[in-house]
Image (cartoon, rainbow, N blue to C red; front, side):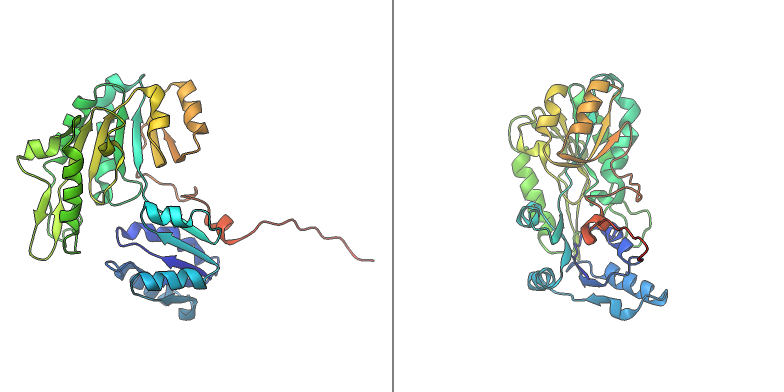
Length: 320
């Protein structure tokens, strides 16, 4: 049996536990409080496909229910912020999933041709409304950063909300009252420091907060950070948000911090070897691969088989 304390940010995270079904391991769900629908729908779909209903249990609720699931199950996944990851990272019974801080790094050998990779950057930031841990929250380069930020802003600033039932809707709504406004306030405090520039707000002529009667939206935001030590250079939010950071290539690996997905666009063999050796990068893409491009035959934040089972040796010989 595995416990799953699920988030509310994106239905896509539920693909992480789907291999449990053919492994015939029981599931205990604690759905995200703002997005319980996907776990219910998936449970019903599996039941109609023949999975016994008693193999899946759903316990909706708040944090106390999540704590009970973690305490009751021998193996659990939990999704949350950096504090959640820090709390459980040394607990062998729990696999925590937190912020991704996923990034695109442009090597010195290709950065002069950055326009060739603009589509990769835009897709990495915008796809899935920027709500995935694999969505790009930072583009790092040693030069041309203001031009890159300007080009990204020109592509992202015109993106606006569409009706919720529009299949082409590019932005996800914030349904918890006050959440979008609070995030907007956090960003404004980070922007109000030397070396940071909000190009999308300048281009639109207004801010990013779009308050409505039943929900709120945050419009895509592109910041330019003149230095890697600025707080806004390494943050992540649940909407299309990206910081374009100016940083020398030789300092990037030490400055980017823990990174779930790193798409490093470079042919520099020495730097590529350093990237492969970087233990704080979980998923490494070498070349112009969007951060949001996954291959489900590869592990994502650990291998669920290794988490649920222990490998052991087995030999047999005839007796007598």
